[in-house]
Length: 138
Image (cartoon, rainbow, N blue to C red; front, side):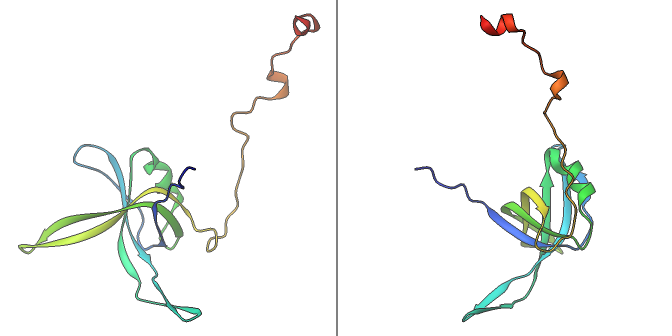
């Protein structure tokens, strides 16, 4: 039996627009500040806790598409992992976290939008190669 591949996820709202940049090694990157709401279970109900604000980061080829699809205020769901790193400010080293998104999309439960579907990869019937009766019999 195969195991189900599971990743960490983050759901939240964009606080800032996605800012383009590059890493020290020249890899395209987008960064944005996001807010994620925490929930606390109290018996049979859930109550909102303190929201968490953090950086969301997207690397490589998906940066261009991602930049044009999200704006501040958009609700999203992302899968990926948490990256912890050190920052030195005023002579003190502080640990910070960022969520590195491998997949990123709008939260369908909180976003109204239309989906336009295209028929990618399908050839029309007239473009299909025809087989003559003689070649079909051989």
